[in-house]
Length: 154
Image 1 (cartoon, rainbow, N blue to C red):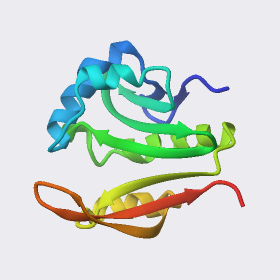
Image 2: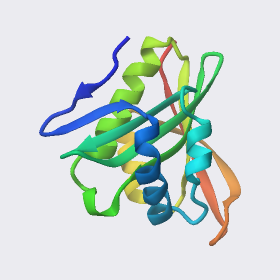
Image 3: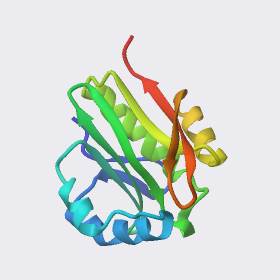
Image 4: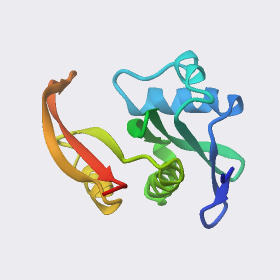
């Protein structure tokens, strides 16, 4: 089982740990209308697949994926606004999918705002396919979610 991995440059993707929580809570505040708190993130320690990206000694992003049996449900992908457009989200997804395959998950799925074209493009590049719509899934503003899934098993 892999523990951490250099992804190029000085970035490393590692399992989320207590030392990441304050920075990840701040990233949540910067990225989302309804951010997860540090306490909510702490509850996920040791569960599912929660990975943090570290760059130059600081935590710059994370991906969270809850697992149920052989299913993976991505909860959040977040990168610090000042660290975007450097391939961090792509590296986090790549490592998440590798670990999901190691755990023999059948699929990994997520919801994304229908208006979030950059995120939809990122997920499509990672092999996620649109499989449905969740009407009025998001609030502030109210918006549909595109349900996207990456199938790992036939």
